[in-house]
Length: 113
Image 1 (cartoon, rainbow, N blue to C red):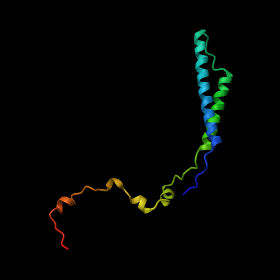
Image 2 (image 1 turned 135 degrees about the horizontal axis):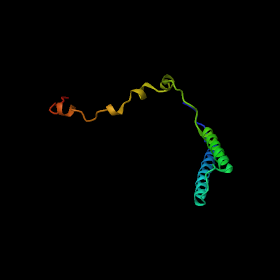
Image 3 (image 1 turned 45 degrees about the horizontal axis):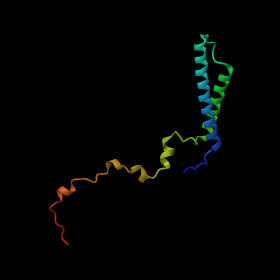
Image 4 (image 1 turned 180 degrees about the vertical axis):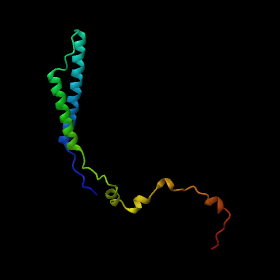
């Protein structure tokens, strides 16, 4: 079994801050476009501060995801199957039948002691 790592609180903080900055840059973009529509201005692109905030928030969110993510698993099926026992591989609860016809067949059978 793999050793479980302690959760990275710094990574989680980076994810939350990146998401909040991303949300704020989206809201700022909406406000900017609403302002341009209200004053009948032409669209000349987003202001530089909103663009920089967007790029930095995506980078911060990506860094947080990398810090929080677990180790990669092997792609090959053999390595994952080697970790399993035969009992866990052969257990198929969907094939268990607890309501079979044995009661109806052996209803009149009397066991002798």
